[in-house]
Length: 283
Ligand SMILES: [Zn+2]
Image (tube, rainbow, N blue to C red; front, side, top):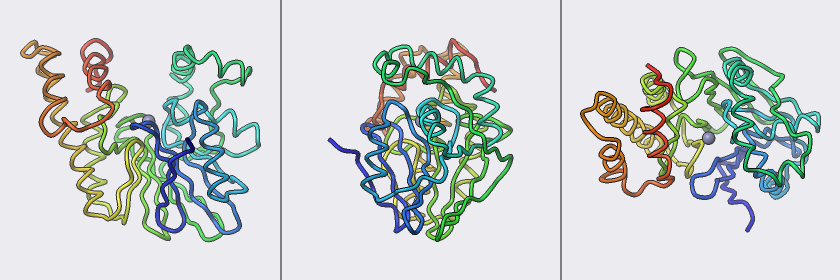
C-alpha cells in the first residue's frame, strides 16, 4: 500500500500516518522545488514515494517541527543528500541534551534499519532560528514560529509553520486530531497556554502532527479546543492520582470513555499516565 497523501490547498500535501502515526508535510513551489516537514527514517520509503508522486524533484529544506524521533530521525538521510535541515534553537538544544539517549531507545528494536543504514545516527539541524524565520520557494512563503511556552509545551522545540499564500497552518504535535496525544514528554500547563494562543490565531486549514487534516478555521479551532479540554482534564486526573485520590486504572478508564471513546492510539493513555506518575513531573 502506498502512502496516504492528502492535498492541502494548492501548494501543500500531507502524508497522513496510518492509525495516528506521524504526519509529514510537503510544501511545493513552482518548478518542483519543495520543503519537507518532518521525516521518520522508519518510513523513509513512504516519504520518498510521496515526494515522487507529488512531483517534487528538488527538496530545498527539511524542517523539524520538534525534536522527537518520529519527526527527526531521517535528518541523517537528508543531510547525506546535502539538504539543509531547519529547526528552532529549542529543538536543537533538546536534541543535544537528550537526543542521543532517545535515539538509542527508539532504534533498539530496529535491527533491519541498522543493516540498511549502518552509520545511521542522530543528526542535528544546521539552520537554526530562535523565535521565527521565513523560508521561501518560487511562489511559496513559509513562516516558522517557535511556540514552546517558556521553552517547553508538547516538546522543547515546538514550531508551527504557516503557508502565507493559502493560510495553511502546520501545527506539528501541538495538535493531535482523532487520536490520544503523546503527553508524557510535555509540560501540560505550558502546552495549554500555547493552545490558547493558537485558538486566537487565524488560518484556513490545519495539519496536525498526528491524525487527519482539518479544512476551515472554525473546524480547525474545534480540534484545538478539543485537545485543550482533553489535556486540562487529563492534567486534573493525573494530579488526583498523584495525590492518591484516584487509582491509575480509574484515570485510564476515564480517559478511554465518554467523549474520548472514539479516539485512536489508545495505547498512549497508559503510557501518559505511567510516565506522569513515575517519571519526571513537569510543573
Ligand atoms: Zn509526533
